[in-house]
Image (cartoon, rainbow, N blue to C red; front, side):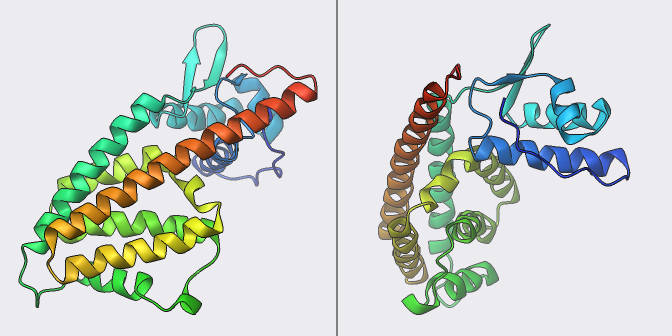
Length: 244
């Protein structure tokens, strides 16, 4: 386990401490400091973050519910190995939900623009010199773009399910914004999708949206495999053994 060093938690309620430990562990998983297959115990985490086992256990169980960790009887905790087949299913569900959202938006009168669409216009339909360059910030805005399409469509249950899917694929999806060309292309593609929706060109908007998601999915899979290979090679060179 390569859990990042953490500052001594401030004294406070266990719930607040559990939240801090949860965020740190999640960051370690997202940044590949904890690799798929890595094993560790509650005691190891508690010693590293200088906290009792109660908030550590709360954080670990939360990550387990979200699908990032699994627990083994007698052998402790393990970072869940990547299941690309499962991610494929989640992306398929996401596409179904977003295409339906676009269809509903395009059925509305052309002079009726939900506030969510107006917000998206202000964010994405801007001049190149007004675009953000920070990949992490654009990653958050990208997720908001797709979630707001669902919110604007008006079905709260669809939006809720879509938000859950977005949370589950975030560990991979954010990697699409580690490369500058992909950041610039996201602005272009989002602008084109919005333009088609605003003009009520439903079929065009759906085709653009599906292609946008499919390309992103392929990119993040490629980047993930490359990053895991690189970390494995580095660890092997240092004499460590990593079970992926």
